Length: 93
Image (cartoon, rainbow, N blue to C red; front, side, top):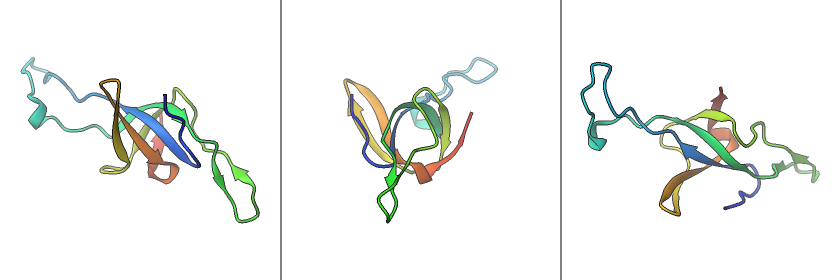
């Protein structure tokens, strides 16, 4: 597994809805991409100008909401992940 650096967070994005409430299957091309996922790994935090480390506000296992079109997509062992900066995280559930 990757270990993020600085204030970066590795996230496993949630899957979009497969069916509508009435049971109609939604094709991949029509799905809304959710902007939430589960934190898989967290970097140690960012360094301030005086060298102190400020820890990241989320921990492994947290479900977060992040800004759309943020982060870098990567693929590990056929699974897709995002690497986000802490500043791209909007909320945690």
